[in-house]
Image 1 (cartoon, rainbow, N blue to C red):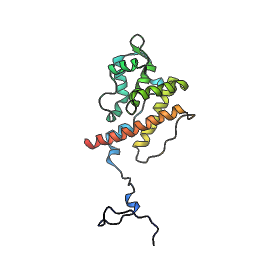
Image 2: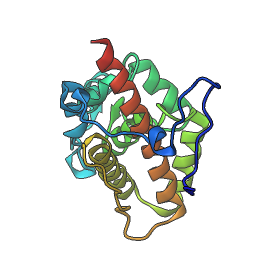
Image 3: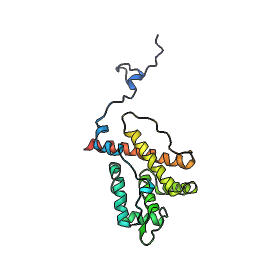
Image 4: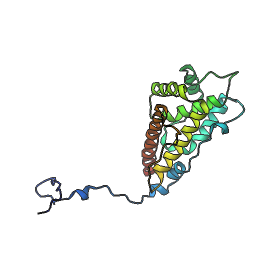
Length: 201
């Protein structure tokens, strides 16, 4: 008598099925060759040193951030950023107040991070993450880590041959694990919403 496990049929009249009948099957999918998936797969984020060197006014910041994140539009409802959002983030102290109504690299880096993380976290959690991160990392190191991890996670999710992506942090810390978890959640949401958006086209 076979030792293979049997799956109980749904009813007395159902055919007997084996566990392998329930195993997920990975098939090529047209979604992976779609414009949406291509945009996610080829997304690149500027590094801190590549952010605008000259301070920008609020409307210029909105235009810049929207342009940076535009390839990921399929996973958001509405706009990534608006002047009123910036005002709220400043009031919440998520972002420093502008200097002479202008925003520098540190402001822009934080605004991009907020735009990404708020897709999967409540604002209070984003605030907590920023507070924890500031203890151990300066702005450029933290932003570049987010950029590297986001690009790597997107490549892993949207390539047909999926592989585990090692953490890019030189030393894995509480802060890096929190950021990596938030990015993983964002990319999972991006994949799901991107796929659903594709099926509606």
